[in-house]
Image 1 (cartoon, rainbow, N blue to C red):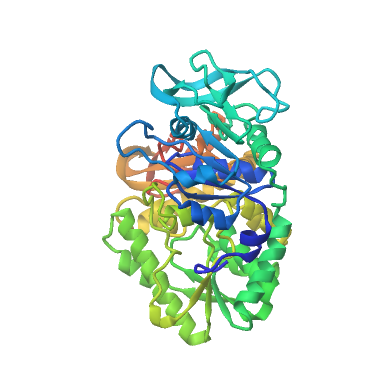
Image 2: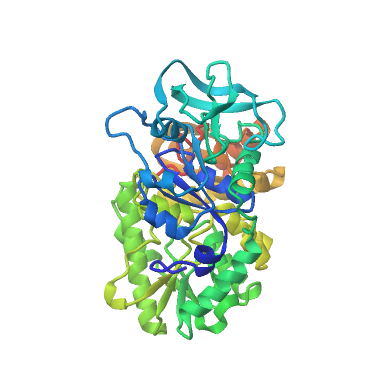
Length: 523
């Protein structure tokens, strides 16, 4: 619930599955898929002590995949006492090999590596593969294989190159699968995870967003008491949902501050103030800090330095607001579950990907405790909560926007010209998507600009202007994303309008890189 305490309802009353992260890029996806089956799921580092997991009392445990080889020196291994807890265990890919290795089987380098789609023949569809039929297509990504199956385990499914693609010890309730059921390329993959969570582990489907709202409202009231809370809002879905949730819980004890750093979308500052007052009934403390932010960002080109400067300046603006409008005892933040992991809080094997400006940075003397009511949620779950709380569609359907704003979409040094180009070009991209009926179908769309220039001809004049990059992606939760295959005529209209209407823009490009390996934002 807060950064130093747990949500009592989630920790004590709700059935859960725990995923141990061995470094897979899909670990969060496993969590999300289990939640889609209405079972609560948490992600923990692979080396979490069995005693800690035992206190959480999960119904079952999943070992994720990972890049290591189980037979290599220093390969990540779980606490051996986990196998003595009597909890059902499902090993996925590397996790499958951990199970084989831990129970006396043998894992070796496969003569034929499997990457991509493979036909899975199901030999036993009584529990893990219940209701799946005789075969499915699955997604493989491994170079090792189980050469010898441990005693007590039987083969449940196989592929052409992997005779031990799925194994199980039904007496111990332990299962290993070499493929990835969590990715969309595996047919009926969610059903496999649902079978493990509900049928094998016995976890009840108690996880839904209305129950989350009810328990969170109750926990906020208990945690905050009669104290006053200061919430930062940006107009994005995360901070708006935090404000709506806290407003439901504590009403007038909540004050919201909207800091304009000058790096917002075109016209966003006026729109946010209007939406909060007219639709949500929440008054805002509006701070125009554009000059202060841009002065500090002057001549800074490194993206990580930009993020840190923005985070530091946000903290300074907060301090000023807290002094003027306080006293406040709590600061509300829109931290999501992936933010907690990405910022290194999990202490798992994943490296810090980027600095999130809403994590930390406030001076200790301010003595503000942090309340993070969304810290258990993924982005798609936040949208469901927002809808239930009555957040209007124009906010609900707005594309995600990074906290540092255009600072990460303007590459190189921030200049008034590049900021203006990014704002105007992004507005054109969004307008054309709406006109073509694509805005609500994609996850995110924007235009970015850097220092690359190219010659264009406007009228009879040769102009040396900026190259604008259009980025449109499809995603469910931003953990993975694919570039959108827009019709050429839509891209053409965007390009024509940008070069004709945005002064200083001469060329337009379209980004065709997916995540991974690329990221959604350019910086």
